[in-house]
Amino acid sequence: MSDKHTPLPWTEDQDGHYIWAESIGSCNLEMTKHMVAEIRGWGHLRYLGEDIAVDIQKANQELIVRAVNNHRKLVERLSEMTEAMAALMRALVEEKGFSAEAGLRVFNSLEEYDGCGVRAQQALSAAKGES
Figure 1 (cartoon, rainbow, N blue to C red):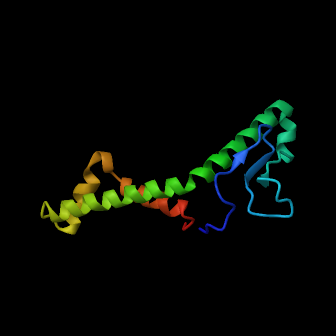
Figure 2 (cartoon, rainbow, N blue to C red):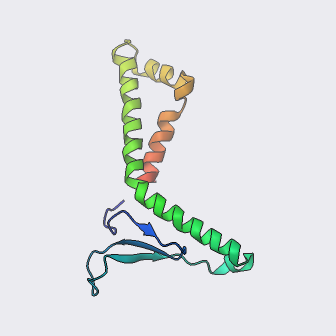
């Protein structure tokens, strides 16, 4: 996943129509913020009634801004989790004298960690755009 995007943080307007970011330079340098995206509720939303459509459009806008602004933090935390789980696995093998296979069986049998390492690695790969 590339970091060649408009710098963070992104912000939303109060009406649920636009997502904004700090200016990276353009023809109107007096503006400090520029539009990154327009949130439009055309299509199926128009059949739900204006109040419902506006609420959905605003919720979509908030979700996009929150996801974008927290993406880097998510990747960092998932990386920390997978590293901590790998350290636990190494400790089972090195400190307890387990073989790698036995250490993995013990690690996977711990109820609170059952499958957690695999799921964390999958989530990390997805967050990085690798899957």
